Image 1 (spheres, rainbow over the protein chains, first blue to last red):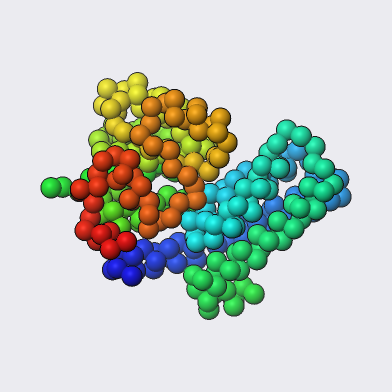
Image 2 (image 1 turned 30 degrees about the horizontal axis):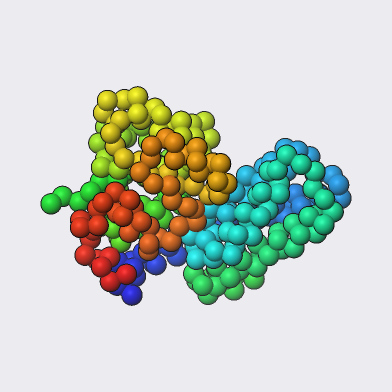
Length: 121
Length: 135
């Protein structure tokens, strides 16, 4: 790894540590929305908010080195922001993807800072 | 030769910081940053960057609207703009391309590769920091 790349990696770890609470908050809001969806009680404003959060995660999880996290978030985004009712099979998929996002956060944390990931486990 | 100066405009603080660090450390460029379209326009007029890396989805003034406003101003109308977007729909991309931007780059981006993608779009390859030559 070149010196600039080492510098960049160090800076990325710092950014991850500062923004991890916000990212976790977004993941939690999505999980809450999907839970309400399973109960058929998801209001449209929360659905839109969760779709927006999924869009943000789609744009940044890959930048933190986890492209599958971005793909997962993008699938959630497209389903929540679509102007269509969500079918029961899609609700199951959304539940699975929301759970997957939590795992992604742990995996990014472990790759960025193994000690910090234990603190949050 | 002075380093190229690039303006990064992104509403998301973490992504803006990563892009800035990437372009400074790997690209070797001078970077100025703005967190919204209005601030981006003001900084473009004041700082005269060589290029603008502009997020598409921002509240109040989105990226495409910001491009149109930059084009209306004599001081900024010729600054090349690269759009950065997490939108993947072909229709969106066609709409963005019609704005006459230099390139449309996808989010998420790889911070190690981002400067090379920008340099390729702007013809800056020869001016790239030798620090990135080993990538």
